[in-house]
Image 1 (cartoon, rainbow over the protein chains, first blue to last red):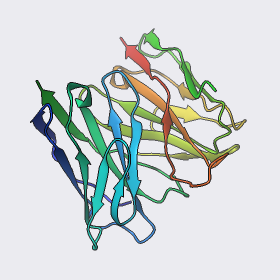
Image 2: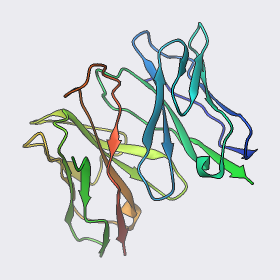
Image 3: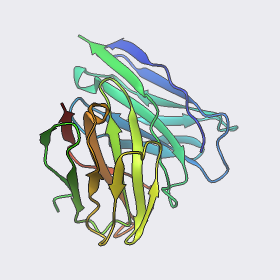
Length: 111
Length: 117
């Protein structure tokens, strides 16, 4: 399983763009990169997934360089409600075996 | 659809007691899993199942048993509770039913908060 490394915490202000980078040097050919968001006292929820280049949805963008050894989750114009823990996972979705979460990145958005 | 339902939401046990945390999903998902989350920490995988009758161990399986007799249910049993098992437990499921694209998206329950005295 590809191990991931993320910053432990980040601080931002409302209205700013936040970029959270995840390192996954031993990502396998079949692996996808998936990001989850977790609010206090709730289970994580899926944000975005990608394999290469750039993926965008209504919540975030995911940038993946050609070597796929890292990825960056971009949250445009964050608000207080984006304060949460963000997890980067690397694995093969069809297999879904032993999906492991790291410690995540705790994002604190200030007014 | 109710999604993933966990019961109970809160439980207090004494050391040595046994209990079962229930997890049920109504999305016909093949994959189900249990995680524990200690305060301020990430989620650690306890056990998982890729289908009825099939289970496997995750990162921290000791002290827990699981079974998967039906697609819908995946109970987690604590054999002899210890204070170190005080945690929040999350059940999650994933599947391809009704989906065009399989992203492996995990759907989580609301969690079961367990305290072992």
